[in-house]
Amino acid sequence: MAAPQNNDKYFFVSIVFHIGVLLVLVFSFESSSVMPVFENTNKNDVISAVVLGDSPKSKILPKQLTPQPMLQPVKEIPHPEPQPVKSAPVEMQKDKIALKKAESKKKLAEQRVQEVIKQKDLFGKDLLADIKKLNDKQKKLVQKREQLNFQKVLREQAEKSLRQQLLNEEIKLQGTQIRQSSGQVNKYKALILQAISEHWVIPTQANKHLYCELMIRVAPGGMVLEVQVTRTSGDPSLDSSARAAVLKASPLPVPSDPGVFEAFRQFVLKVKPENILDG
Image 1 (cartoon, rainbow, N blue to C red):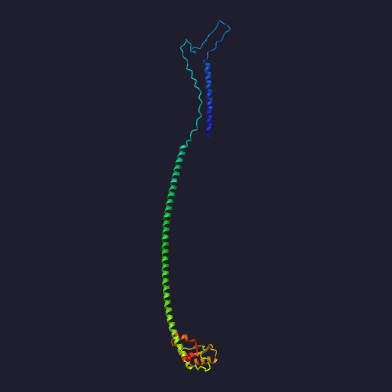
Image 2 (image 1 turned 60 degrees about the horizontal axis):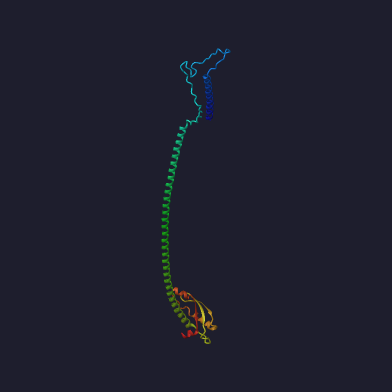
């Protein structure tokens, strides 16, 4: 650094200056002092000599004294302070430019922040709008689903009610058919018993209160195909006579309606001599 070298230089100059001032003072003092009187060996001859005008009390010559320089008190030479670098304005200019750049960057950052905030606000609004649309859509879907479910329940209830009505009608019809068929069955059973009684020759020694059950299988038109004793009366002669009477009565009177005839395709008939005799 240059500052310490300058200080040493000024220090040496100051020392030289002080030494010169001291020398000047010494010489001026010796020149202004009274010249000494030299004594001769002869005491009577005394020569007094004075430098004219050399003393302020001298009256021989007008006083024309040369002005003596006033001694000034020695002042310490202050050490020069380090001067600012001449490039300070350039540094200040650079600082201003850097400050402007920082301010511009700050403004840009603030603008970006504002833009981000706006984008977030827009995104939030769009998101809320989408959520609302989605909720509305889901509500509509739920309402539509509920409506479809309600219509389905109504349709199922209507179908169930209709099926129940049809079932009730079918049951009624079947009941009617059953009643009619049972009436027809009873009618034709009576006719078959009458036909069998006309051909049944009851043994004289048989107990008239006994009965037997016969399984009879016939073809359409009443032709007897098979007769079996499923329950005996205990009297073989009575069972045999009853079976023979069924075969002799063939073809038996059976209904011509196929639906009613199905009850007589194979049936069990209970025969009792006293019913035959009473009839």
